[in-house]
Image 1 (cartoon, rainbow, N blue to C red):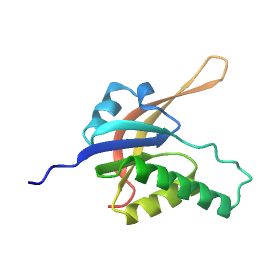
Image 2 (tube, rainbow, N blue to C red):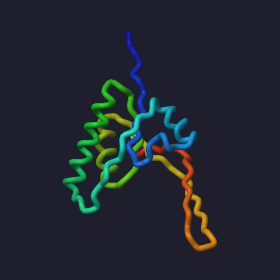
Image 3 (cartoon, one colour):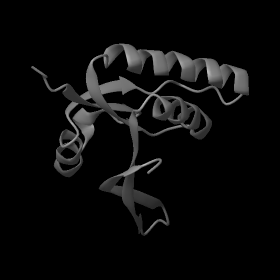
Length: 127
């Protein structure tokens, strides 16, 4: 008898799912139970070796916490780190997604720009 794997949606970003709007949370839950992993602070002076080591560490965390589960990873953040994480996890069969938003800019009477971001959809890094 075959049992279906639990579906899990891992959010690796600076934006915990508890802060998401209902539309983004509903879209994420289509992929499974939502679990957050805080995005690491990436030092701007870090070289490629350091970024690679950090990515390896986070790939191991995702892999360990999702054993025997059908995992989809939402990853947004510093681009070179994201590239390394996505590249590794996709070779392991993990679907990796980015979130897309609509940016709305309001300019105050004082000339200050205020930006609002509204979730639109998740998009695969590689299809």
